Image (cartoon, rainbow, N blue to C red):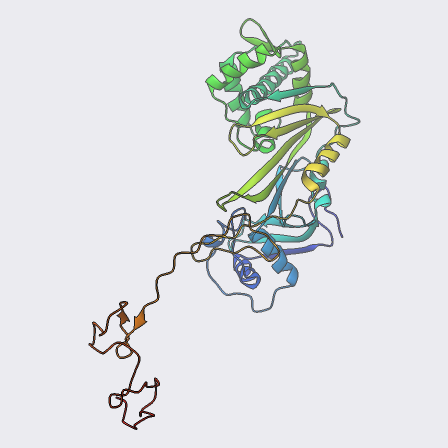
Length: 416
């Protein structure tokens, strides 16, 4: 099977450009509709109804849209450079190697791009194409566990140090050790985030982190205190300055040659049968002879943590292989009992929920043979029409009568 090149494009795979109406037709052909986790969930409703394709679609198109509509595993791979930051999205079923790539195209008819099938081992090629370090990475043995607030502070420190270095270069003056307070970091962060290019760490972290950082002035003040308590900042006048260890890491991270990220969401279910997604996410930054890994934890909550480590490409390839590319165990879909449209467990999948208790049955009531009204137990006459309750009998000889007969079998009298 063909591989994806470093440009993100594929050779020899099934590659389609489809209108919104064609995607709707594919969903009908697949007998499915978008579920949670699908990019189609919020897009299909905005597609204007129109003429559908009359030619049966290729089976590959149906298989691709089936996985995009009801995915069990979702991958996002972001890379930059050689081009602008680009995120590629892949959707598939847990346990499978083949994935469907989805692209949302800005076309008037709501166009979409589908690529199928893509091997997991091939989808990470754009990521590694962005992590050129200009030679073997130099390891410093750096490893920092950072809280959300400390990470926000570190990102702002990277940018203010780079600003000071650029000012020194423009003025042709020796670079001085940066000194800063919380207000300086706050202003530097938002200047960097709104800058027109990606040289600043604040902008790069918008792509590399699983959530927006958006530090506050109070949060930066707390982060300065926390990093100082850990010996990563030293008191200076005014404010603080990076320690030698942190200053070396900041300088190396600021010399950015490329960066990227990879995320993986896997479908699971709560005890109540509600879908939930486990998220794993890492960010990578390549400098001149340096490669940095941001390994994010607690990604389901907004209060993330990160472990910052200097690494090398071989270690990253092994990490991506073990954590992202190895197929997962098949998803166990619980049996759902409830409103119309609830879906039972698929064939071969075992429910993780106990079977619901059956509702108590009502006592079955007899009905009047004349008018059909329900009869209460023990009554002798129908309360609606007055007919006698009991087994049908001949009015002449009182012999039992067979329902549907017109004449008595004993005396021949008509049965009215």
